[in-house]
Length: 114
Image 1 (cartoon, one colour):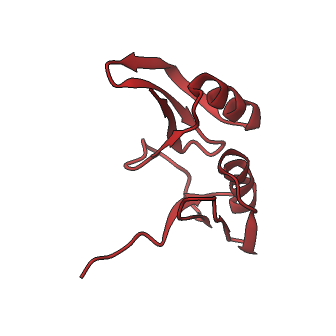
Image 2 (cartoon, rainbow, N blue to C red):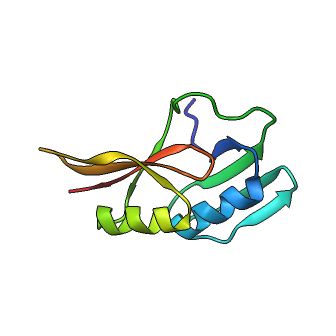
């Protein structure tokens, strides 16, 4: 048996707000299925869902998304304009560049590029 990724789910406090942040970054129309569950179907990617939980984020993510947006600097600037926060400086090495950010609820993600 092989499983396939159906969706990626983020625990959060405000699904309706967070789905709109991610829809602005990735595309797709935000859908509020209920007060505690929202999702988007970004073009070319699996569904990303946002599930309300009572507890807040308290530690570093064990999983995060690496997003290729072409121009890492411009993508990071746009994410910050939408409510993200940069974490540290841009990292450049032999494999390319990346910028770590946190979404409005503190979930880490990176923009990566060559």
